[in-house]
Length: 512
Ligand SMILES: [Ca+2]
Image 1 (cartoon, rainbow, N blue to C red):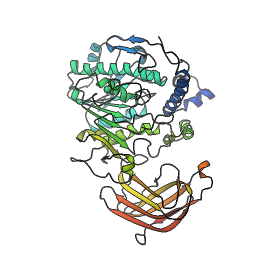
Image 2 (image 1 turned 60 degrees about the vertical axis):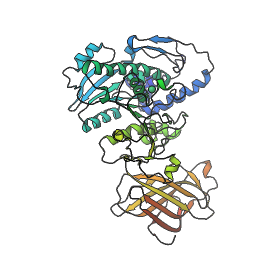
Image 3 (image 1 turned 45 degrees about the vertical axis):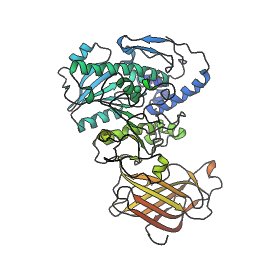
Image 4 (image 1 turned 180 degrees about the horizontal axis):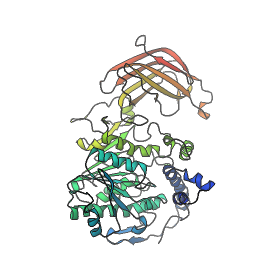
């Protein structure tokens, strides 16, 4: 078998899995604290380092055929030949209401066996069928997969299948990407079998895939004529953006309805940008602009610290993971992720895109299919769960004081029913000058009622960028607009100085 990538370069993910099965040692215990999303980040980082060193190597082309799954080649998009189906060990676990382990279908078995496995399991062709497909490094037993299945079964009496290709996803990223094409062929074969042998209407089949799982869903859907829906949750970008054409990646031809949530669409740079940014579905949702998610640091240093025991929000793949968290929350939440058409996130932040198309705003997530809206839509979310909330446009105007400050700003909304928790106004440190205006759309998951005041905290940033900067900002006024009621309130601050890590509360409406 010809593999164009050095076999030594990215074995970390496998080491992690193996170490967990060994007797604990100091090294083993330490490694076992590494989280899958850390392995994702480090593994892709290592990939790129070695990619640069072998970019000019002569790559031999090879292909392999796995029976009716088809042939797979390293030519074009793939750097590696995929593992054999027997190595990937793909399974489809059926979960039903009251039975979360109703049947396990092994992809390598004969389809006649699938039929007998499903017979008597409680599977019903009359029900809608949901299929969850995990991504790189994850498996069918990864926490969010089970949580999503549970929420789906709370919502409806579905057949829910969990795809587990963990033996193929926990390898180097290029290898996992190659394996994903075999999994897509297996998933397509299974779904088509549900149609031909069990009588399932493919229009009632819905694939929900995250990251590489979204690409698997697309590539499976392209082989299942009439497939109802694919929800692509931050479809994987590396390899698929530049090296694979539409016929080999998720696009709107892969199902009757393809909805996409983009959460980490920055240009891929090892630490972020695991997701595709370009619109690829019938409707594409860009929460918080689709690049960085509030509450996520996505930074190298904090990411590594998060991976070895810190908070989830500091992990490298935090923004990438938000896509499945938003979707899972949307399944049973009473809060609507109402999303708005806009030319760009920059325009959205200016508060100019509050309207809805005829028929109403599409909702990001599970309910996206209820809208006939098509195109790209924006919504802001809270920085922690529950993410869906009440949106506000906030403009903060600094005074004409010749201040030169560096840091970030936090706000607390004071309402007539309750106060919000403190939220980020600026998601990263920036410089502030005289007469600066900063505008953002913010989402509160606390219903505060009418906003009667705003508490502002300035936190001075560290590092080289802070050299020579002052320790305060001076706010002139804060303009706040309820995105639903369209009520605009101006809080006049009388040019109060806000020192580093001090709070100032503004309630006055007069004297601006
Ligand atoms: Ca496609």
